[in-house]
Structure formats: structure tokens, C-alpha cells
Image (cartoon, rainbow, N blue to C red; front, side, top):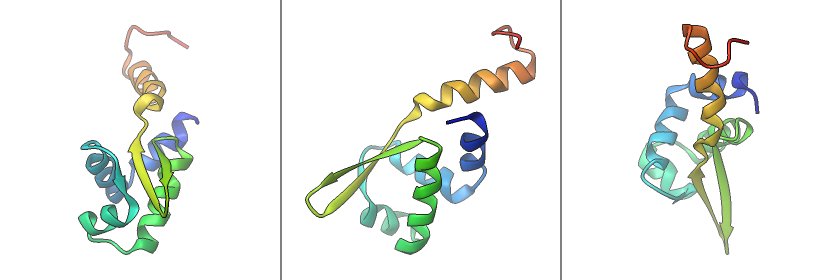
Length: 92
């Protein structure tokens, strides 16, 4: 995914809250909705945006879906931000 999708996903407070919750480890979608105090429908919408940006990934175990962070895609966004700030990395 590109920087645009990552930055778009990070622009929403609820999605940032989801990422901070997932920082603590893998969690089921039901438990995640309870922790965040949002409806499963709202959670599904935000998880879809985060998956599209490749910031999270899901695993299935029987009837449960678990979500985890995938922060490797942040490297590209960090490089872009550093370039914007005038960092010494690749001046493209």
C-alpha cells in the first residue's frame, strides 16, 4: 500500500485507538469492540480501512477472527515524512 492509504487510515482517532489497543497484542474482534466501546458494525468499518492500508492483519481460529498489528508498512510513510521534513534519506 502507498503512503496515502496509511496516512488516511491514521487520520481517524478511532483507528488510532484500535492500533494502540492492538499494540498490546492479538485480540478478537468482539473483544476489541468491547474495549473500544463501539458497535461491531462501526468496528468492521474501521478494521476494513486499516486492512486496506495493511496496518493490521487478521487470523481465523474456529469461529473467531483475531487482529494484530502489521507495522512494517509504516516504514514507507516514515521515509516520506522524513523527506518532507528535509531528512537526509533519499532525496526523491
